[in-house]
Length: 465
Length: 158
Image (cartoon, rainbow over all chains, first blue to last red):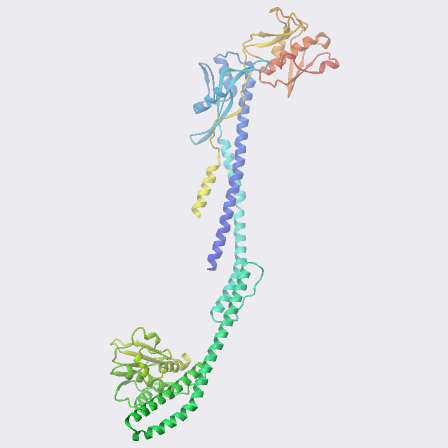
């Protein structure tokens, strides 16, 4: 990215310089060459007029062949002189004289010139009539016409030389432009790099990161804006955290406040339960319903308090070396599930965990499988080099795809029928928090056979995470 | 980008060198040919009169003045105010805007009309060979007077 910006700046600088150099070289070479061509042409036409003027008074008029030859040799090597039917031709380039030039000589009665390119080389054609001037200044055509051809190859060489010199003198500007471009790129990229570092720190979660604005350019404005953004982000995050903390404290407070009346209610319900046998059938049904709901309420409040402890970060595992297979077996036996659950356990797998929390997790997963799935419910304990896996599978229809991402959400119930189940709706959430407390995790998936599969992973060495 | 640079460079290179042009004028046509030379003599009414001497070419100012000094040859009823029988060799020195003539005559020998003859003949040849019509003539005599060195013009030529 940094190279890209630098490269682009460099390219832009060099392109602009090259273009400027080229245009400067071109225009200076062009004007110089135009001046050179003009001067050469002026000089050659002047020479022609001067030579004719010098020799003309000595020529017999009307001219004979000898006079024409004399005039021709005086003007130059590549020359044609004509007078009516007479003509004197010198050199082998006079065929280059164009019809346009002859027409102009005849119609304009003045000295004319034309540049042409023939056989890849430039030539100057000069044509003129020779006029007779009366002593009073009146001019009349004499009938003598002179055409002369001059090579311009030497001029062209000089013009090309001018172009080369122009390019040569302008070329040193290019390395200078590169140097300037590098300096400019650095001066732009240094603040950009500082901004990038700040943004990177912000992205990594360091909301205190700021960049010191220097100077007064657009990058400084950007720095100020970034700082302001970081500031408002930090403020929002703090507000959010405060609100979250408030909500958690509220949950904890509510749960705590509910505990005292609930224990009273539990005691009352115990009394009610012992007296239920002597009641009328409909009254007894109501009493049993009340007892069930009170027990559910007690569990809900207990789960809420557990969740609050996780949220507040006050949950502390009491870690001890536990044989996972034994713990699972004890859990099933204590709940009377031993004959309904098939246990496949590797013996002697010892992991440092909180025995109570492991019991809560396994009981929750197996309880869910028994309640919502279908037999056979199977618990598999297996050990790998770095972790222990406890898989709970059932033979039911499995979890719908829409439900899978949400099974660990608090109070998530995908089925209205589940509202009457004894679960609090926090079981899987608490189970996962417990697993994470040990540096492990729980994942939910569907087994190949169709049943739901919950996998608890616990690290054998908690320091590994 | 590279392609544009190349195109520009090609165009620039093509713009150099000598390019062909159309036919354009480069000044007056040269002159100087003439079938005869014009000498100035004096007619019966004491006026300057041109005599065309068919020499077949214009020749130089010195040649024309030599012919002038030799006299009208008794033709056309013309006479000269320059004493005959003198050497006819005239030295001509042209400078920008000025023709200096060194004649083998003393100032007292030549009448004003004779000086005009010399001046007009020289100027006529000068103009016919392409010289500027506003040139002046100084006649340098062997024995000059203060007035004889003036810059003169021909009264009958523009």
